[in-house]
View 1: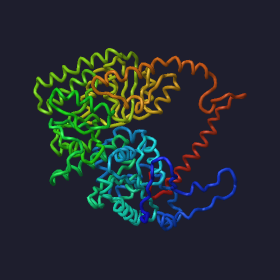
View 2: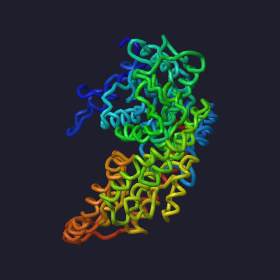
View 3: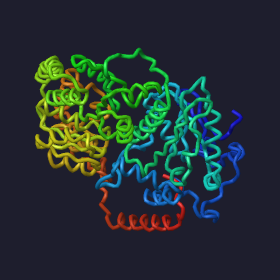
Length: 552
């Protein structure tokens, strides 16, 4: 490719992507590795430190703290952006939940859309991690990357490279839209994606900033991109006729579904709505651009995931009614159908008919697979509250629900219902709080993130990973009512296996003393404290040396 401002990172199997000269490093011998001429390869001059003093800021890029990066971003003209993020995604009592890089959420949304190109601008280590994770989750799509160094960052050449890359890839024969995402470093440095053209050759250009110090979780980053796309599509629709959706238009009023969910759930919701003369509309985030118009055209939006604040703002601007919660369990389905009926002005007899058609089946499904045991639940997907409702209606004794996502007006119905059942709810829950709840309530099953499940199993408590084993199942209607019983009951029945393992490994020690020893190592606390003080002193000295943070 003639244009060297854009590196294409192919996430398909086969072919090695080279980010640096690590492949030439010597491994088990002392022979020096050949030094690749990377500067010439990237057609870039040697880096100029941000402080203007050689060596002053070397290596600072990926180690600067969130507060320093936020201050740098505000000084670079991004204060308005960060203020909007604070309104949309309030952090609450915790600085930030322990979650994966938030940009993975928006990246995943873009990679799932047809005819949509994705370009990242950020530190190479961040781009590597994000593309690796996207491939791990089966994206099988190409990701563009605009590299930079200190000089291109501070002189504005990075923005020029981004603009050149966007022009190069904007092919209307291949794409409807190009998404360019600023990660931490370009956001902190004020790289102005807003100055990119709105469209090139008929291809829409969507620029978003998804810094780890501004967007708390990857779940909310999905909303950052979905909201930006909805805003663009709404503007297009207001200016005149737009392209019709690929699927045949349903003449019935539709209910747009907000938030990612199991593929069968929209189908189930569609069946729930049929007796009311309604249809299930598109799921936002959508899978292609034209679905955005259909989503905006629906008179009612079901905020299945209530934290999609930016998306809800666009639907509200379009005059759409927003309904929170979801049709989960007996009470949840009945209340949701009532709320949808009221928002869509459905006749009382039709709402009653819809409830009568499905509630007996849900009741039967709940009764057929009861759950008998105490459970603590936590996660970062945003569906934790509705899963807790379903578990409780299945008979489980749920004592605690922790979610990394924020409390919003559209989660109020779920909060009220759960509190009436005596459940402790913690928004923006930290790992420490989730673990403390597990230790306090001593559940028969801990459902949570990977580190929570690890702590549970170390304590001999069965655990299930929320994202892959719980949220990746049908939750809505009769199908959802019977979906959790088998996996949850099977996990709780495995308690004896954990007891056997604990008995088997009894006496082998923990932490630094784990293993079989002739003489058990002494706990030299004074040495550890001395080394800790050294590390703290070194960290403080390094932070003082960093005057202009440029990384995540």
